[in-house]
Each structure stands twice: as C-alpha cells, then as structure tokens.
Image (tube, rainbow, N blue to C red; front, side, top):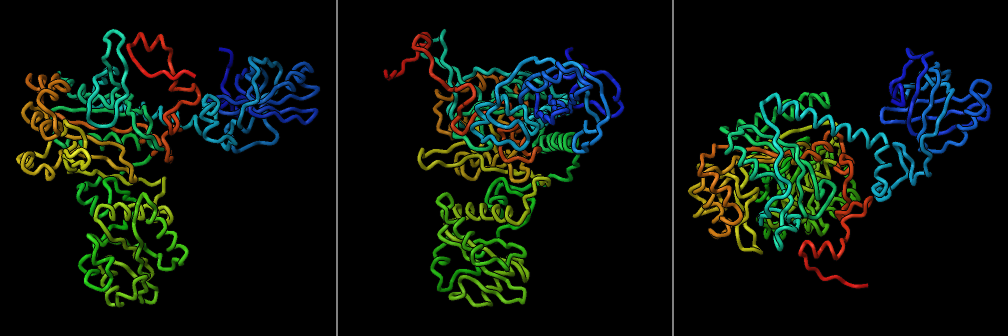
Length: 585
C-alpha cells in the first residue's frame, strides 16, 4: 500500500507516529514561513503542516507548487495541533511533513469540491466524477451501500435466495414503453430491457424456489422527473404458499429492519387503508399521513342555496387547517392561485375563517348565513382559530386539486418533516381501469395480478367493480413498494387477458410460456417490488433520487458526462439490419 493510514483515521493517540497519507489537495494556506494543506480522501480530511526551519527546503518549495485536487503522497510525524478544530474528527492532530511526492497534478476543477459547492446541476452532472468527491454525494452512496447490505442480511435471514434474471427479454405491450435492442443474429427481431423481472420470478415459483429476491436493474422508456430515471433499481421479491397478510408482515419486517439498522429508528405500526378510503379522505392513493387534514364532503350542507357554483358541482369537499384563521388576504390569494394552476384546474377556492372569538367569516357570506357556516365547521370538526378551505366541481378533478392543496399547506405549516416517518399499506385497489382513448380496460398494476376471490364472478359482468389482491407500501406520501397476489392457474389468466383485449393468439404469442408453465403445477404465490432508489432518497431526506445514483441521467434521459444516447455508424446499423432515415448534413 502506498499509504499507512487514511485521511480520516488519525487521532491524538497517534502522536509521534510516522505515517504516510495519500489523497487530493483540498485547500492550501500559505502564510510565508508556514504552509498548511488540507488533504482529503474518501474517509476524511487531515491537515498537513510545512514549517520553515523544520521541514526540508525542497519539501517546502514543492508544497508551494500544489494546486487544488493535485494527487499527493505525504509522509511525516503526527503532532498535536496548537489550534484544535472540533468540527472535524482529525482536528486534534496534524502531520509535520518530511517527504512529499506529487502522484498526479490536476487542472483547476470547474467547481468547488466542497459540501457547499458553486457548481450548478448541469455542470456537476457533466463532471460527475468530480461531484462524487464531495462529502454530501459520497455519503449518499455510502447510505445506498448500507441499505443494500442490510437488505441482503434480512432477506438471507428469512431464507430467501438471490437469483439473477435475464436482461435481454421479450417486449410486452402492457405498462410503460420498453427500451428495445435489435438482434444481429435474428434480423428484424428485437429484445427488450426488463421493466421488471415479473414473469421470471413467477416462473421461479413454479420451479419451487419458494422465496426469491433480487436487487435488480430495471428499465422504462418514460418521461422523467425527480423520482424517475430510465434505469432504476428494485428490491424484487416473490414468495409461494402465502396469503396477502404473509406478504405484508414479511416486508414490514424488511422495512423495520432497514430503519433500525440504517437510521436507528424503531417504526411502530403499519396501518392498513383501502384504496377507496385513500381516495375519499386524501384524494390520492399514496397519502402523506404525517399530518391529518382529512377531506370532509359537504354536499348535504352546502347545496340548495343561491350559490350556483356549489349547486352545479358533483362534489363539494373541504379540509380544516388548524390555527390558520389569521391567514392574510395575500396568503389566501396565493392558495387560490395555487389551485387554479393549469395542472390542477380548479376554478376558485372558498374559505371560511373560524375566528378566535367564535365568529365565522367567509368568501361566500353573500350566499350563506353564519348558521350555515357553523354547520360546515361542525362537519370539519373545526375549532376557533381554524381555517376551512373548500373546493367544488367534478369529483375526481376536485379531489386531485384538494390533495395538492393539502400537501402544499402541510409543507407551509411544517408538517412534512423529513426526519419523521409515517408508514401505511394501501390495499384493495381496483383490478382494472378504463381508458377512454383506447376504449378498453387496462390492468391497474399488471396482467398477472389476482382479483379478490370474492370478486372473480364480476370479471365478465362488471369488471370496473373487481378489486385486486394488490397492495402498496407508502411512507411519507411516497409509494416505496407495491405488489400483489398473482394469478396462478391458466383459466383465470386467460380470462384476465380476454378482459384486457388480448386475442387468444396475442396472449399465446406474448405469454404462452407462462400459461404453459401454469399447467405444470404452479403454487399460489405473490410478491412485491420496492423502488430502491426512492427508499434511499427517503432515508437520506432528499426529494430527488439522482444524488443516490452514482451516474444518473438528466431530465432528458441523457448522460451528459459520456454524451449518450449518441448516434452509431451506418456500418453498425447495417449489421443490425436497422433501417433508418439518415439525414446528410
């Protein structure tokens, strides 16, 4: 080894020891007769000292040639610092350098390699290998490493076996768009990169591997945002001979284990909420339950007056913001503009202030008496000092807008504390959802999700009422995992494909291998997949998953560091039998 110690391990007990460190120059402070250099590696920072009359003149001269990010090897004696720095683990000591070797000089980096950098997102993405030297990013990847190690520890303790599944698979029409790969040896035919290992893990259950998991790369060609990447990582799991309750208990255990081992937090309970209740009381299927502010429907007490907007509405629904009756007109106008944004599309916002003296003042006093408003306040369980916020209109659109308003208020009021965690299982999703454009049913999760046994008889007569044996784990309003009990017999799977608009021939072509496998003794089985990148960002208290991925893509799906996707040569295209229009410049 070129070094005897790392830049993060030396302490006061090492004083008088001769050591050798290697690392990157973070900072140089030249005070004439004395020079200090902060040397950094993955493990920390150690201060080096060069002193005229003590260090050799040649060593001092060489130290003056060093620039930021030079790679050096430094040998010297550990001494106690006169001016100690209690903000760094090595702050009680420094190294009086006797030998200095420049292993590699460096150009001046395009941004500061420090926690508080001056580099913007685009610049840091272009020079990601430099960004990874910063403590904050490195710690995120260390967190990811611990999460991965502890996942394997827990799964191994529960007799799961890790099995790798293929990366070059068959394209399927359901779900997001596939990334496709042309086959040179099979002209005109294509592989797809897996959106998940779904069918393979089911085949492993048929094979008798009753507890499977894999920390696996998946690929989806879809529009990107802060919590999406074209390639992402899942903790993918499947079990045989189980019920839904077995799955929920097993993977509550995994998440408890991760919180305990990685964050030192003991999670209490994992309440269950039906999809119908999540939509009714929170307006979305992944409610943030760190705070209450549940929806209350007001149709019965708000209709029948001269206020046409309410009378014509399919739904009138409100929330109670505790202690917000003192909101100013400016604050209320901000909230009104928030819900009127095009992506939410509310026509307006009705408010009622329940003043501290017990009086009620609203934006619709012209149409409603104080007695009417009192009824609203009672429905919303409001107290003096609270603020009622009410939306109306088409039911689904109104619930979506109020859900976003609730989250915005939660943010403004400090209820969405990233250091607090609220867990939830959402269960009993609809099996199918109707697409008006395509005029057909689509699987809400995927085509292999089993319906509730008691709802199977509705599959042909009333498919919209069929509930799925499906479940999502939600933490702090983020869906971190989802899964289902699977269909495991050929007849029910064929019926499901029929409801999804597959002809018998299409079903055989796409999934014949799975249908045939079901005829060879498939056990009852089910599973779940966790978004590993999302879990890491949740544990790290971040909104974006990018800083928890070593080399992420940007919002256009590009890796600006290696400049890809990129064109390939005409010869390569010809070899792959891919014919495209090539514009000649």
